[in-house]
Length: 191
Image 1 (spheres, rainbow, N blue to C red):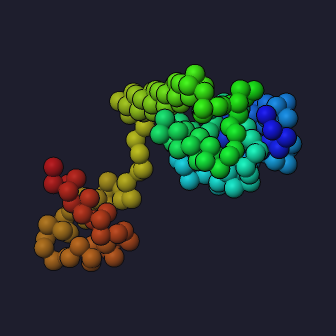
Image 2: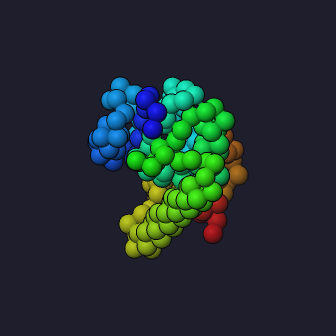
C-alpha cells in the first residue's frame, strides 16, 4: 500500500454499529481522522455523503481502504464503476489487506467474484425481508397505516356521499381529510 490511506466504512441501518469496521481500518493503518462513514445507507444507494467525501479526499498515488467490498458497493456494476473511477485517477483500492490490481487478470477476476457475491447477498436479504413481511401480514401483524377515519366516520361519509348533496371537497372539509382519502373511503365502501 502507499503511504496515504483513506478509509471508508458503511452500515445499512441506524441500529448497526461502525465500531468493528473503524477498528479494522485503524488496524490496517488508516488514521482515525481519515475514515469517512455512512450510517443507515444501503450499498445499493450510490448517493452516500461519506462515500462522496472519501472519493473526493483520495488523490493519485493514495489508497482507498474498505474493510470488505460489500461495504463499498452491493452491485457488480456499481463496484466496477467505483474501481474503474479510482483506477483512472491513479488511486489504489484495498479490500482489507488485499490491494486490488486492475491490471492483474486474477485480481480483476477475484474482484468481480467478490462483487457478484455482495450483490447476491443483498438480493437474498431483500428476498428474506419480503418473505418475512408477507408472513407477518398473513398473521395480521403487519397492517400498514391505520385508516384516517373511524368505522363510524367512514359509514357516515358513505351515507352523505350517497345522497349526492356533498361534493368530494365538501366531504374532505367536513371530515378534515384529503380528497384522496375521501376517494379511498368511497372505493373501499363500494366493494
